[in-house]
Image 1 (cartoon, rainbow, N blue to C red):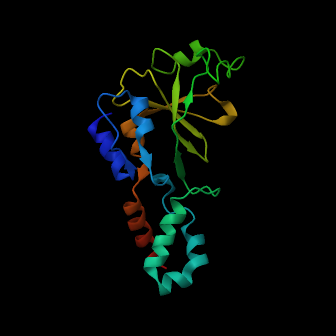
Image 2: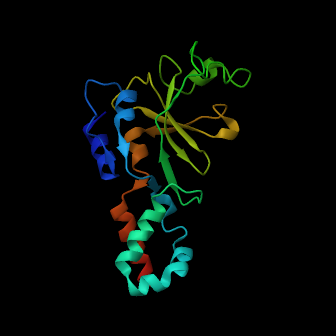
Amino acid sequence: MTESIVNKIKELGGNTDAVSIDKNFAENWRSIRFGHHLYDRDWDVYGIDEYYEKYKTIYHNDQEGFYKNLLEHYFSDHELPYGQYFPRDWFFTPFKKDTEDYEELDGLIDEHEIKEIVEGSEMEFICLFYFYGYPDHFFVCTTDPDQDNPIVYSTDHEVYFQEIENEGSLEDFLDRFITKEKFLETVKEYLKEK
């Protein structure tokens, strides 16, 4: 994992203390811990008006408390889709014998079809994120030739691995997320007009 990726993960709130140059990508990813979920910058201030209306009394009486609660709300694990990406680290090995999910894609898609899109010697994956939108799963092939900055692929539970998109390198993929600090700055600027 490159130093710039490690730094981006730290900026986004991830603990990378156990990342090591001696580990492959999957081992490093599984050693990272996020204290909260990540927020997609493209969702900008989605839902802020509703949140403000619900808690405007607190906003006017205790802005510090308002913003603390706002961050907890937007970066938390709940059923309301506000652009959160949920970090994951489980393996998906549908073509590897003697694994729990072996042959899970049988009759849906063949390994050679996936190899036309995905770079890697073996079609074994690690899930990086789950998302409430479309697509909802983001994976890296564990045998990606670039273990320092692998390609991220997306698929959705409705068309699981029957439709796969190349989302670009991990380093570029991480740019879609906004830090808590930048999110807070954006919301404060937006609410100035209230």
